[in-house]
Length: 220
Image: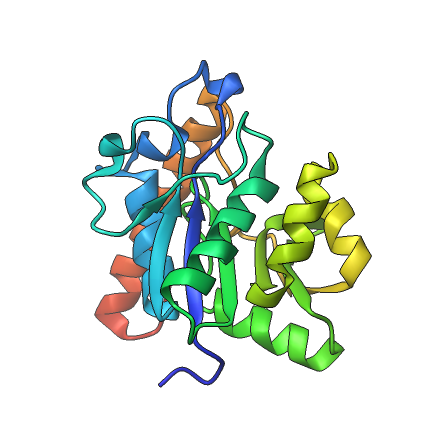
């Protein structure tokens, strides 16, 4: 049993990937697997259950055997709409789950203790929200959200709010910090150069895991 409340894991894959020339960034391949598969493998063990937020033809994500949930507000208003869709889905389908943890679908190196540390940070700071941070950057879509704020979020979106951080400031949030070296665990892939850099990180990381497995000295 996890040492924190039951949490729904959500992979956000509703972006338009303009800097990659369109298409679905999470379906790009890294080390023989899609980015989506890397994210799912890291997030799933941390959560009670998991869903994917995406729009358009949902059959393209059929390789991942989890529910795919579309935005409930039209015209691609951004990641806040994906968070709202997840909160509303949890309230309807998983009423015993009161927390949602979101991660972008293009962040293949998310920490394996992400949900644990987000809950710990939120609890220590007595705030309703907690997001991840590395180096000098806060990652507003890698965040822990209470399901009971879904009505306020819907109202804000319908009133025109789009920036995730603007909505978070209205309610109060804290950050859980990770080091950005030897690589940033929240490295996200926006351009072809980023994908090449991620491949380099993956190859070095895999080599470290393999060497440590022989000695028992490293846990990814």
